[in-house]
Amino acid sequence: MQTRKTTLVIAFAAVAWLGVLLQLYLSARLGVANGKGIAGGIVAFFGYFTVLTNILVAVALTAPLLAPASPVGRFFLRSSVMTGVATSITLVGIAYHLLLRNIWAPQGLQLLADVVLHYAVPFAYVVYWWLAVPKESLRWVDAFTWSVYPAAYVAYALARGALIGSYPYPFIDVTSIGYQQTLLNALGLLMVFIAMGLLFVAVGGASSRQRLASVR
Image (cartoon, rainbow, N blue to C red; front, side, top):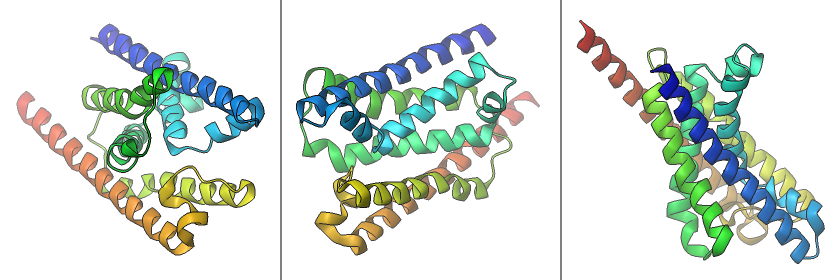
């Protein structure tokens, strides 16, 4: 059973790193094509919640495999942390599908990166969470703790945008919609994130109770 779990984690981590590294290459190439150079492409790459969260997933899967006794490995073995990561990457998939997929038409390698980052990795990590993550210790308050991550991202994206004059997503593009609408949009997404986190806690609790009942 442990061997099967390890194989599953390795496979999912490989998919996550594939998506991240492919997008890094494509961002660097686009930066060169736009006259901003590789550095400009890398700056753009690190501006997206999708990219940062996929990196988070990749590290969350890899660190416990390579260094389970290290502080980072132990951190990502905590069920509350793994569930927070699952909530974050689920938001990536849902927000992209509902808000962003119709505003562009990626082709070729960009289409592959798009599918991996927004669909394959969220699906894979939620499967991993369902099959491998202990859920007994999850608490309702965890959902609010996890929301610090997307809130911090919004602060980062707005500060970054003010410095370089570019915002990664249209719903937080201050130059187009202003700060009031941007903050309202961000608050709405944060509420969705918290609701999703509460749903993960509820599903995890139900799963734990069912498992305990089945062994009695």
